[in-house]
View 1: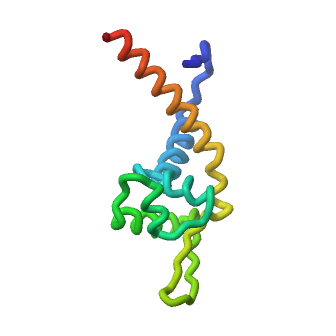
View 2: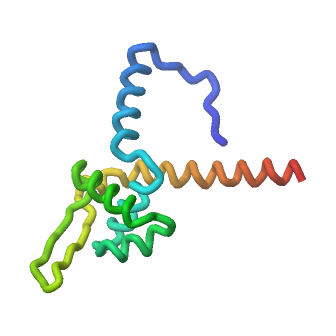
View 3: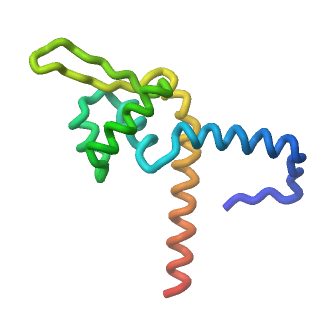
Length: 125
């Protein structure tokens, strides 16, 4: 894990501003499923059942709620086609692609954390 020595700490105002930004971001993308749904849709547009199949473990009720929330926050676009029966295809918006760096950093941190836990478990054995 990379640690910076003698790093200058932010003052109270900077810290409060940063904390407010983080809280706002987490409010929009919080939960276990939102980023997973976004990642699936960034790869390609999908129907509801395709999403439920790819996001292993999500219930249809939760997926419907998450899609509605993501649509409200402009991360997902819901396209309705007048076929019989009606076809609904979900797609990622350009705005959802602004999360690319955030997701990349979370992925890198998750990998680093997994390795840390593995090493910790080896030491206990």
